[in-house]
Length: 77
Length: 149
Image (cartoon, rainbow over the protein chains, first blue to last red):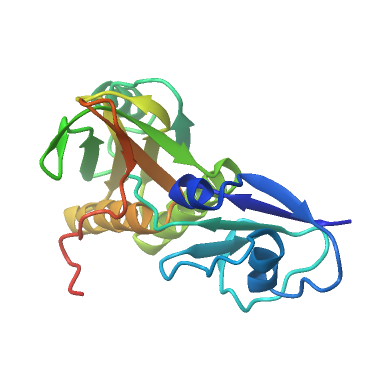
């Protein structure tokens, strides 16, 4: 089992990753997931996070098998 | 109720007319429609096209949940929402929201609630192509009519 991490739009461009997976029990929160795959970059202040396609907070827990997505403010409509 | 994400252009008013044919005449007394279309300018620059990216699994669920909540809250007779993704050109429709209800207040309020939520929460992102060949992400949407902050 692992955690699937996805990035979208300008945030994907900034971090240079669209999708990856992380394994390991040290990933306990969404913020841990960011730190596990983005090397040394702080989470931008306007970044949003979703866990399993639902808006979440960076301190919310994640578990093996979850999907965590990071993205900038939305601009649809 | 119909909620759809389309990768190709659509004619919003034709979609409204076609959908309304499926509704029972006499069951609604008001209809409100919002159509968002692509401009050929933004922030002082000419924009030749744009690409709308989305988070497919989340978008679909978010729009379905939103439609159900708004339809229940405002006791709508019916609702139609279509949103484009992919490459879009000036003049093309980006989003259509149409709602049918017994009275006008519910129609106006529900249509606005749908549009404001999808513009602030549905995971879509616009990337503009400029005439000079550059492209750029749109960083935020403009404020809605009742936004106070």
